[in-house]
Every structure is written in structure tokens, then in C-alpha cells.
Length: 273
Image (cartoon, rainbow, N blue to C red; front, side, top):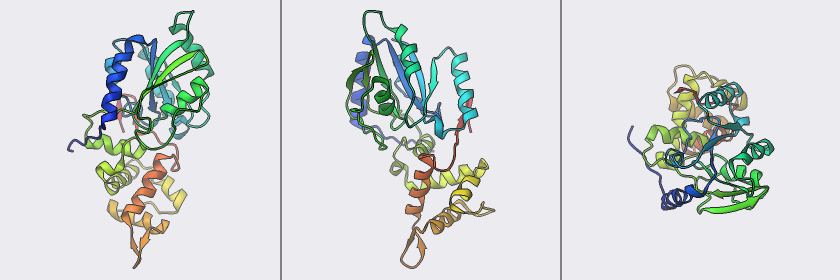
């Protein structure tokens, strides 16, 4: 598949700023989506890890397969990487604060950066960590546009805009769009949804769609016919009773990205599903 690039100027600026700050930090915390821990890794980390330690937070644990998350945590531990998994809503971080304390000299607070690609939960994690709610929190990739510092509970933290890998190919963007981490419009909402239909069928996961919306498991239908069936069931119709594929595609992709179609993990340690 051809390369698809979504790399706004504020992302490039954020990358430069974080590179300049890295020498002043005690640790970097990379937030990833627990449903795809490898796919949602930040392109910043390899460069920054040369300067200071990196720990990993797997966010949206409540949206991922629990057994897969446990395997990922074990994998990080075996690699010598400190990692934690947190729920999307009301993440509990007291134990993380305690484990971060030794990274800083005893006379001052821990200085850290929170990094990650768009919409993995960076700002929500930061709010919980420093006890603030002033960082912007939302579901639109790229919402945190600048680099800002936050202080609280023994921590001085810098937030950053979500930064995607400018070298990521279309297949990567396709899967990131399922998670809400890349704008589906870059590839096309219908294409993103058809890829998701194909994935759910291939992995034997269509049962979650049938349970939620009553759309029977497809037989030998083409993926577009399956998406049309979803659209009909959800009432995504235009005058004349024709299915509005764009509307059906958005409903399906949004439901998956928000975890409304069950706890699904897209990849296992060592390889993508």
C-alpha cells in the first residue's frame, strides 16, 4: 500500500521542542493504546531514549483483551522496561507516582515528559498524575497543539502534541484510524470501515457486531455488502432507501474505536494480528 502522511506543522515543532528538553528530564513516559501497543508506539521514543529512561503506560486497558494486556506487560518486564496498564476512565496512578520518585534527586520533584501518538490518552493520564484538569482532553487527534508544563503531587511534567510517524504507511494509518489515533478522512472513511469489516470477519469477531446491532454473521458476501447491511440495520439511509455508506462507515468505526464492540486487541507481542 502507498504511504499516507498526516504530519501537521505543530507535530514537527513539538518534536523539536521535546528533543531540546530531553536533557532536562528524569524520565519519559510513553502512553500507548493497550489494544495495539506496538502499532501505537511513538516515533519520538527511539531518539529520546538515548538521553533518559523511558517507561510505558498502556491506556484504555478496559477496552482491550485482558489476557493480551497481561502478555504485553510481561513482555515489557522481560525487556527491562517499566510498564503499567490503566483504564481509560478514572485511571489509578498512585502506584505510578511512588515508582517514579526514585528517578529524581531527593531534593526536587520528578521531571518528566508524557509523549504518544494522537488520542491514546496522554492528557487524561497527565491530569490524573499531577492532579489537574487543565490540560485539554478530547477525542480529536492532535488536540494538544503546544508544549506545556504542569506541576503537582511531586511531579513537573511536560505535555506534548500527539506525534505520528511521518513514514507510516497506509496500512498502519488504516489500523490507527480504527482506534481513533489517525484521521480516517486521510484514507477515506469507507475504506477504513471496509478494512475493519474484513478484520472482524477474518478474526472471527463479527459476533460482537451481531450481538450489539443484530447484523447476522456474513457468509460469502463482499465486505461492501456487509457494510451495507450494517447501514440498513442502523437506519443510515438516503431518500429512496439507499444505504448511506459514508454514514454507516462512520458509525462502525466510531463504535469500534470507543470500545462499544467489545474488548479487542489488534496485536500480540512479537507480531501483528
